[in-house]
Length: 214
Ligand SMILES: O=C(NCCNC(=O)c1cc(-c2ccc(F)cc2)cc(O)c1O)c1cc(O)ncn1
Ligand SMILES: [Mg+2]
Image (cartoon, rainbow, N blue to C red; front, side):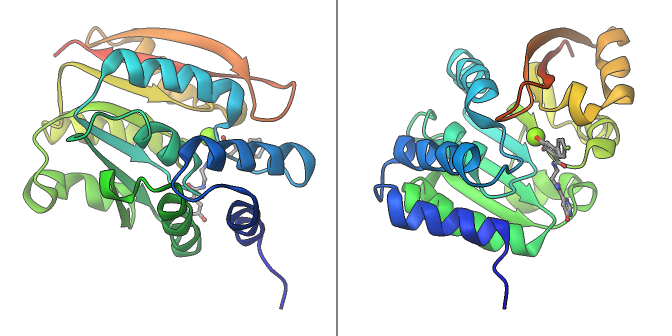
């Protein structure tokens, strides 16, 4: 039977990356996507912007929407202080299965909780079921038409506090027009666009960083 792209990406990690070394896992995936097959990881260019936002936020509790193969999960987790936690939500069980193995290979599994399911169902359970108070940082990288409804849901569930940071991938390509309009025009957010490129291409894309003002 044919392997899937996530399976081939995992194979490259297990063959070429050093166990327990997150940087080598990231480097291997970027090399695989540049030399073998494009995949929808945030990538190395936008990944550097993600790194700088994580570092300056110095978060204790992070939520990632859309795990895919775990590339950004590993990038974020590798920058977290010892007690910090990252909860990552993935709807697709095949992606989740691959991501768990990538996360473990990188050695960051103790900082990460991967939860399978639809973000719209799981977000309302964050406080009661996952013991979360509020998120310091949210990385949005899942279905583009879920960015806005899930942001409103996080507000309603009291999961954002004054100063919480939303960082959204793909606001240009594939694009999240309704989300952009909301965070750029709402008095409750201070937004900033980081111009970049779609992972592994010359196509314009970027990250939108939005600070919740309470
Ligand atoms: O979340 C799920 N997919 C990944 C979301 N992410 C994207 O769709 C995504 C797409 C692109 C992209 C850009 C240009 C292009 F030509 C094709 C794709 C880039 C990115 O950086 C993404 O992040 C998902 C799947 C599924 O089967 N069930 C539930 N959820
Ligand atoms: Mg993306």
